[in-house]
Length: 422
Image (tube, rainbow, N blue to C red; front, side, top):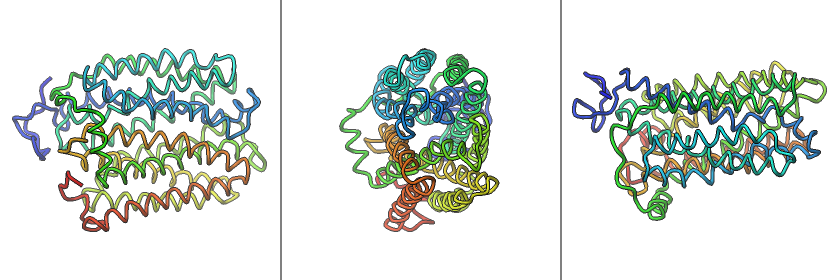
């Protein structure tokens, strides 16, 4: 596979001698399409039960907090599997590891909806999550080995935009099928869609042009990564913001099926169209970062999250939808920046290979634990309890990002400088 000629990507290693794909080249587009399909396969399966939680709770006779583990078990599997898949990929290659992951997840995903009880379903969902972990854990690293450095920020944004679309399609499809055939058929339909997307990824993914370096000792690499304050702040950001985001959407289905809204689950699933705000934010947020600074845009995105969250306290469905648009767009804007900064802050260090998987560990651990806590809070105190938990988590993430920036040159300077050893 040949990289495009005449690139103006810039950055270290960019130029005629860099064999990786230039922005706009055929190889670049093929890599993005393949990873888009991987994102669909992953996030459609991972969050397909989210709009179905009330029906799952009724089917198995569990409460709202317990039902959230239909998602939480999967994200725990992802959190546990992320570092192990990264280690395996160092030995067998990113592409081969991701192919194995997509195939295994598709097979388990078809079986999970037919589990005979709640506990067996959670076990299968956890196994499914462990398999799915191989995709988000390796996607950004694979992009870094496939496209030139100057094109990486935009490529990561495009990949994350694809994951938001996959999550949206999975939720909509599950809700639509559930209305006619029940929640098990809804989850099965998403598993079939994910299998098709996984097949497309396996066929389309290009070979890695720049091979990975010799695999480091994973424990030593992990210890190096967690000694970097800049990386630790981003891992904490992932835990807090993703956990808060999932908590809000878990509780949303329970809130809106109650009076005065009394929406059906298929109607609730249509509200996930607000994910298009996340798709847009993910695709454009680095353009703003180039003009100011990544940390400034991250903090601005979290401010948008706060404004959107406040609007959801309204009793008006229109105001709730407007708030969800802001909440979703702000979250994915912040996540796109944080995900891109993780590799940048660890670049050139012994822990560089483990920093993105560590970010994913925080991301999915937060989804499991805080996602459960926010849903349980709804069962005790209603929507105001969920909003309080979400607001505290988002505020803490903003304070950590600001404090790190203040200690390293200020918000407008910290991530504009090349500082791999932070």
